[in-house]
Length: 312
Image (cartoon, rainbow, N blue to C red; front, top):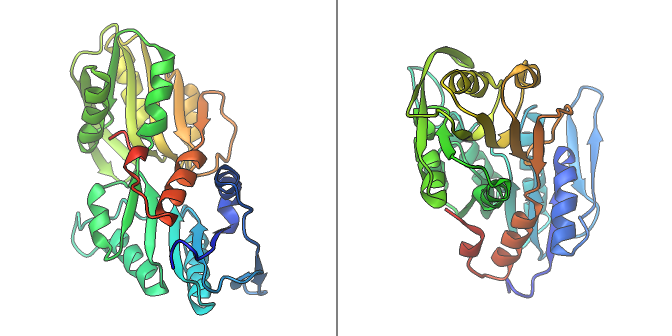
């Protein structure tokens, strides 16, 4: 049944820019949807073609506003009620992933709640990229395909052909990711140790490791207000680094982020298009994840291994 069920790709409104590229890479047309909006702001998405018996892939990143998440849930529910054979939520950026544990009393675990909402809505499988914490996969009772942007970042980095390359983690939590890059590229690794006075506000920071005369690349899963990476870049340049670049999968870039990046000593910030870039910034290079998602969708649909799409 899975090999004969037709495949159909659809997208939420705010992720059509990426979904169209994924559909083009796959070789199909993006499915037609519509959205009815009521005067009070309530909305109702609908499919403008049949999905009965189809293997439906719904592409939607759940960046802010929360309406993007709600639209994804409504599209999943609509596909289920329209008798879709299987429903896969393709979530390039998985919002609320930073809320993966109780880090203080009386707070929610938002990432677990998102997993429960998706399963309750009727999703059969989830496909995403560079979760804030790998263990979020365990919040689901359905298959999760967790892709890594390293498959496009590493070739880009090699093409730069930087001498004295050093990989850096922006904080202790990113040391595992930085170590994976450094092991794959056979480079040293350094770590920025920071303390926060509150969310999105950096207290003290220092660099652990030698960056003198090094071309440093800071790797991270996301950049929000850019406070951490710009401060890390300043400290590394003050410590004698030749240059500092940043590689981050999800370019949230809220509040003062763009202004901070422009004023920082960062030579280049390399991001992906899991989230649309709201402002043009000469320091930011955007790499597309359309190919890797199209290849993974094709492998899942045809029940083939997705291992070739991973670097680490």
